[in-house]
Length: 274
Image (cartoon, helix red, strand yellow):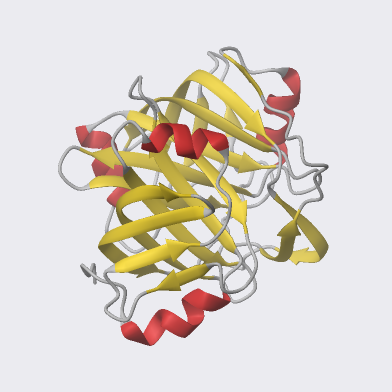
């Protein structure tokens, strides 16, 4: 299932995509995830599937982080068809994009993706960015309302990876001690993200504000609760959670915005009172 090159049969699909999640690691060793919208054709694989060009100006944080080693995790995701593909490897920055040497490529199942149209947000050239160590009230509000986020993990030998997490609004839980709890639903049984966290607890998450185009990025550490209590069935029966201790946050503009109606995935668990 996990290939060392991008399969030829998905080249056309990849060129049609307009939404990319990116995982990088900074000079201090912190993991970060972000999302960038683009126009059809901004993802261009070569004929062998061993290289990918991302033809879009990158956020400054991505460019700065790549100077620390070049490892990268990518996720191309079609929010209409609910198809998604992960592409991991190493990257070098270009004047207007990235060149990625592919090491891993594989599809994931379409579960838990909210169907919507997401377009690049309008910006006036100057992108407002903020950062801090303590999450603000507006960040907690976004976390409590979102139906989508992207999660970056790493492995000492396999490198970086970024994956999608979705659910009904409110699926992300805010614990009294300040940790962020994400339920882990039944998936493809590869346990890429959870397996990485067992080896390396560092984590990054990106939560796009699909009303404003602002992206909240949080870095920290995580633990996996494999058999926790789940009286309201918020995990859909797995009893698994990822509990994140935030260390720092960063916000940037230029992310996607949602247009028109959205449709929650029919696979989402619907928690009920005990």
